[in-house]
Image 1 (tube, each protein chain N blue to C red):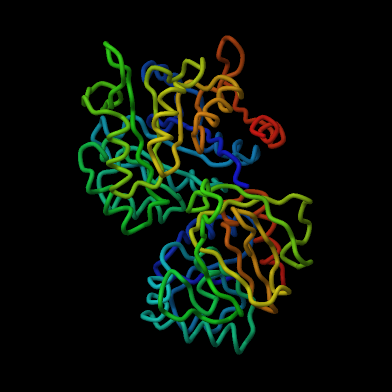
Image 2: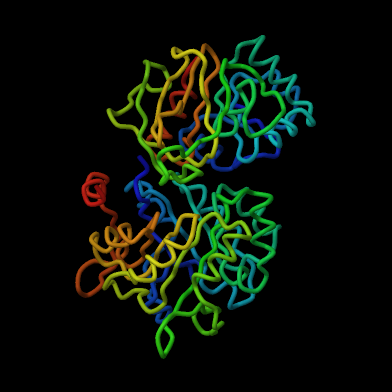
Length: 204
Length: 252
């Protein structure tokens, strides 16, 4: 059973729809006890970093998530803002993040390339940096749907799973032990997303 | 690198899909859920669904149908038609739809654009602008499915809704709708150059080349109806979408 964390932020319906399509059992929950006891978690999210963290803190879900992820080591997949919340913190806000991965969330800076549009919105290809259970069966060129203005920068290169390019290259996914995050929206990336979420559903 | 998005734009009338010519003569082209399943298989970039009679009939969005469609839609989806309140928007986004498209509301209650962008983020708010040629040159924004002349300048209006928080502008040219003879490139160029948010152009696509031309004119995304639902000179209904490689090559 995959438990999708409902903290009032993000498009939970799309994720549930795709998990149903895959045939993976799932539930949407805002209940701290259920989250603490979950087998597997998806942390979704859309919007501003501080709003997301404030909501996780206010609803009392953060301690339950820490118990499941840091102590019981259940697999967790962060999506978009959910991925960013797993870092230490973000240039977008001032609240500390969950700190499950050694990384910071930083802003896209157009720099020399003036044509860079932010948010980075649309389909982009990704390059794999290491092999992973999440990428099982992946094609030579995988593409995903992105919508974001900030991105994650991992401290350790061996945590980086996928990279993409928007102006400069950035970390599009990370994986360290049970902690996984993707900047894109697998639930809206048709066959590529189906495969990735299917792999997450199968992963022990 | 981001590739230019190519978006099928489906028009809903009742529970069926239709296609219009210059906003008139809706022709039935199929069942929406069936169409969405086909577009899934064809791995389209994004899908846009517009209920063209909701506002006219003073109806709220058909949430039940939107839910059924969203359940089958595994790519980003935008919905427009009959949206008049924050509650409508909240309900639609919760069903698994990424973006709402505001048309009449943007003209008649622009504060809704601002509120929606503030609460759900600019990326979730598309303002669609219907534009028609003026009798003596130039263009103006029209309302109520092209029936009402507002006298407003398209670029000026687009800039206003951009300032209110619209994350994308959908430019719909009434005179080109369903004609399949190319987009109004001058207008696309003018709006794309004057806006900082992405411009989605719709109206007139009949060939891949028209999509390329609109991209070259500055559109960030191109939507089309007839091009994806009709086939051949007699406009037989057949849903199609270019192969990924074909799009890559064309837009390279």
